Image (cartoon, rainbow, N blue to C red):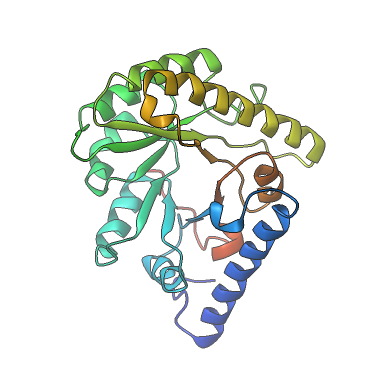
Length: 253
């Protein structure tokens, strides 16, 4: 699909069919559980696609969109500023020196994974309008290609967040390894979810307002959303299955 996304009746129909297919997969994955499809948030990962593609899925009912690169995100957020209830999620690795480029739009930061980034975010913390963050935890410590903090680092980050007015910990994010072994992936995701809930319980002891809430679990993408949902995910990050392949690789800025 090219940069004239969703300008023809056929493209609009394809977008609607893709969204319907994702919703059907979510409903099927949750069958037999106590959870409902409406308990799951679809984050449409729009990196590498034009703002018009976001606008089309917005018209189809989506409100949550994820970007990974600061410059691309800030440009699209500016182009789509008229969509007042659009919710942005910054899901990529965030360099500390890029925070000032995106902070105006108050995205939910999914990839908080180190003290230096927390220190930078704290400069923009405002108790009157808190920043929402998720800790990125390691899913597979043996996977050198995926970032995320280990348990000990996560403990320290949680403790520090609880002492910063204006930063709200919403939950945890993970990126699974690119493997075809579904049993191993299930085992890894179950471990991730278990660690996330233990961390949330400990964090809630320091912040009692969190005790009545479940953490956000941002886990699962186009190829593995069913496994992630069955292991407790409630936010799935869907790119290719909604938008199709990217026409070009976005610049990592």
